Image 1 (cartoon, rainbow, N blue to C red):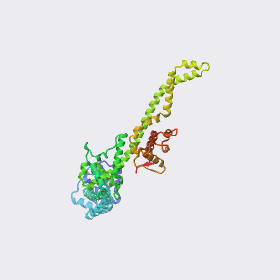
Image 2: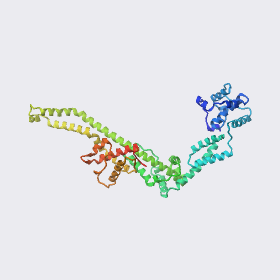
Image 3: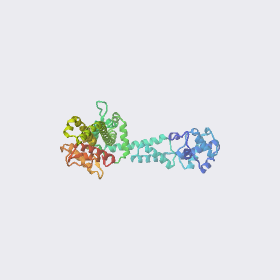
Image 4: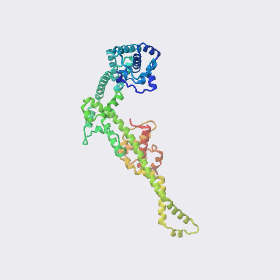
Length: 463
């Protein structure tokens, strides 16, 4: 049924007309066999429709005027504002039979229905989803040169095949789930005091990252690992089917999920949790990057503000120091006399400001980063406990992560002189080791920056 399959554009472009409504010389010869201008116009339109869309137009009278006149112009007919209905219904029947014979098409029959059902079930068993099955049905009928039936007929076939295949997929997934995993799913479906379930929390998009929210997502990732989500077996099920089932579970609330049979409920939950684990890890990587970027930015702003404040004070204080030095170096004046004349508290204060400016200029940013280590420390131990893997060439970073893990587990009291340092960003590396001693706060901060950079470049990843 044409109206159910496609919508004709009211104002088609020249490209639309050329692509779908152009008649060949043989077409024109076939059209001119009809008697009367209106019959020829209707015949030409239906011929183009079957060849272009695989089915006839339901109501030729509703075909846009621009299409009708474009076709009529090729036949040599004058423009018309509308197309009249045929005087006899048998005329349309005769035209459709002639068009099918001319284009080599045949009507949809019971044999074709069984053939289509078989190919749809075969594709559905391979994991093809309903939307793709629908397009496959249309493409198959076009390839077989069979007139496409009403949309509802194809939809029923597709739905039946997809439902049967989905049931088999649910069974396959659910049969591989352990009783412990199923019990964990039931626990996630229980509503808490606020009326929400633990499962619904896995559907939330993370807020602005801070140490608390990152730690919260780390706890969720840990919950999924403890459930064994990473070890779920989806072999034999197409990845897009897993994603489809996960999306269904995401759309349903817990009450909807509880109404399904256990097999379907557990299979959908397993797919959703598998995708939730990937999403949680992706969010953690991005949140860590945003947090470290913000930490560095705030440290830089604090450094700039302090540096600016000292620079504004430095001209006056530098003048005091320079005046004192010039007076002391004047050979015509005894040092003792100069010392009595100088305002020594003012000179010492000025020297202190200049020294502070020097210290801030040389290491103020590092000091600001060190002062913010306690914010990073709130979640870094749990973050570094994630199961990282590395590409060849980044083994040193993985060794540093393992070194930090031993520190966080309490297996060593301090970072220690044996800790790797070369992994740290060059702008921070020279300040980590001072006088042969490793600054533990800067070492961990450098590790956090290096892990974030490696995750974004792909040198470090979470399998």
